[in-house]
Image 1 (spheres, rainbow, N blue to C red):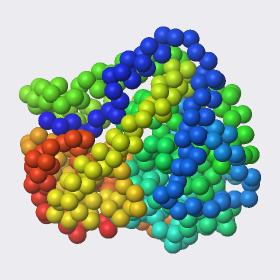
Image 2: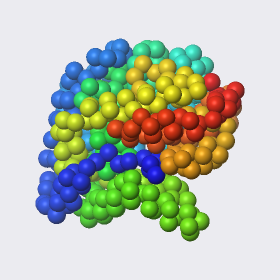
Image 3: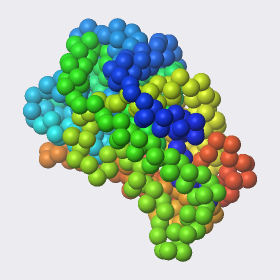
Image 4: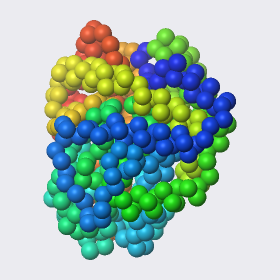
Length: 427
């Protein structure tokens, strides 16, 4: 049985992460190291995307580490950015309509109003016209997420945000692909996650690339006031994900699935319930911590790794081979994106439960992207996010692995019923 998702971390990294929890370390020095390494890695990083231009009128922070901030999570970084921006209460924040629910919860915690802007199934982004149509005089910021491993330049949105004076925050949590991508040069803030199921995971941690010097200075000042994550919290996290990494190796997962079936339980739902970074916590107190030395040491090790680009390329190649076998490759979410690294390969289906059951019977434990939600529209903004709602209800993520044999891809494609690609795709 192929598990629904594997953890992009090896046993040597997990051993290093656990050993780091037993050593004394200076979190501030490790943070500076991570920020320098991430910033230096992005020095020539967006050559394959069009330059988005500048956003706003504030001066830009310098290159490299001078514009990076290492945080506990992307959620922490968004919280810092909104606190530092000090937008008037009641201001509206346009959000690409599919994201993790915590992101719009954080917006609301700041007294702001999240407004969803629907996206296209092909690009997984709203058009410039959709952004403009959703705006009102109360709009003060935009949060746009690149989904499923897609990357795209944001030139029209950057230009619109610059004209209107909006803060532009770019969520690249699912888009990290190595040192060649550091977000759109025109975004005020680009957020990168290294949480448990992300590419090159450090089991936590994030880096914010902040191109507005004044905003970055305010974020750093606020960040310094937060307590540092405890080392024992990181040790528990490493132990937890070491166990999950073992359970999601294919031979072990096959046995777990068989045992769960005998007990009448769904192993996929149990796995998904355990991998969330802040599941079951009081959100703001949980995210308002600085990353500890052990987490930052592991993150620095993952950023130093030379195999990330190669691993992402292998992942994308397997996904493309599968997509070419599907009844309608154009309907795969993100098919029209300029860059798609297939962090997830997700397809639309009218009956996700039936599709998942057929795949499971053939040895593929497909999953729903349950961590995502459709941003709810506030009163007076019921313009409808049809594609977003359809994606959240009907998307199924296919369990792909680098090096998956051709016969497995043939079998997976054969299981997917052509009727699954129907008029309800939301395109």
